[in-house]
Amino acid sequence: MNQMTQDTAADRSRPLERDETTNLISSDKVDGTTVYATDGEKIGHVDHLMIGKRSGRVEYAVMSFGGFLGLGESYHPIPWDALDYDEDKDGYVVAIDKSKLEDAPYYMKGAAPPFDAQYGSQVFGYYGVIY
Amino acid sequence: MNQMTQDTAADRSRPLERDETTNLISSDKVDGTTVYATDGEKIGHVDHLMIGKRSGRVEYAVMSFGGFLGLGESYHPIPWDALDYDEDKDGYVVAIDKSKLEDAPYYMKGAAPPFDAQYGSQVFGYYGVIY
Image (cartoon, rainbow over all chains, first blue to last red; front, side, top):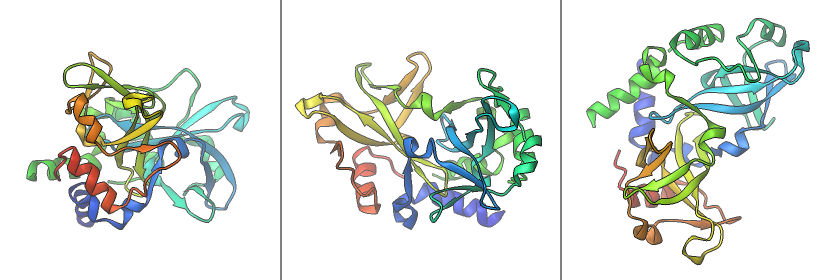
């Protein structure tokens, strides 16, 4: 936790000294990027990101799973920190089994949740992202 | 500076306890949002964001200034922290005079810079974003 806090402070306080400044990605490239389960199976793609207006932090990547589970177009918000970018796959890997996605928080097109603290708690808790 | 560092650490370490969790914005809404100068003049719109793949931090909002300065389609990367969201305007305000934009770093369509440390230093320095 301390290490994470330090890294985070460093991220913003010295962004120009990081190697990761060469590891930027454009939002219009993120949108549409494939998301894989840990077993390598494609489970969807990033539809859009939810970003803190003031913090500039990407809080959620919202996956689209068109037709998955027989639901029609549905959206699963996944904490950004639950996604690992895999350069070989050129996509994101989420540490969850496809079968477990049935229980993951989702919403239908046109019925977006408030993305408030209570909803965040549900999503972050589901993916086991502990801060 | 200390305050900023603390805020930053808090942003990531306790995102669910912040009021700002209700202040999220979708990436597809950010893209296209108008950018104003401090005098209220429209100076362009957000074309896309440049995001740290691992940090999840929005580093730059890349403005499009179609035809501005007689240049054709040009892009000006602006540090996210140099943009203030104005709810009344429903747009971002950048603390720079429109006339000064002529000297701001920009690139032409299809000729994106490396976005490395050296380039970042130039952009961050220009907008006076001190970390």
